[in-house]
Length: 111
Image (tube, rainbow, N blue to C red; front, side, top):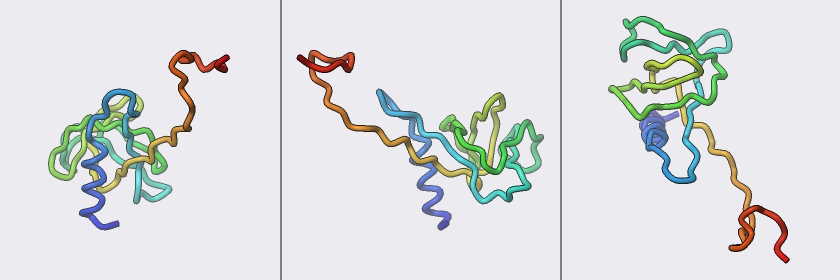
């Protein structure tokens, strides 16, 4: 994937959702099946590894904080920095349409 397109997609994903919108999460990409994505204490490859995310990891929550090509994230019980090269926004869930009758907020048929 084009690095510019990837950076733009991640920047959009880090925008905080408001109201009834779902929070955008990230997934791991470009990581071999027998490898992991390292979560680091500081945004550098020399920093201590505080956790790992599996190659099929999903539901990674970005904090919105960035430092160069690094993104601060939370995954399960670990928080830290990951390279933005290895994460990409997950597709948001598809919402189903429905008729919200003004007097029928509970979802029961209108009379």
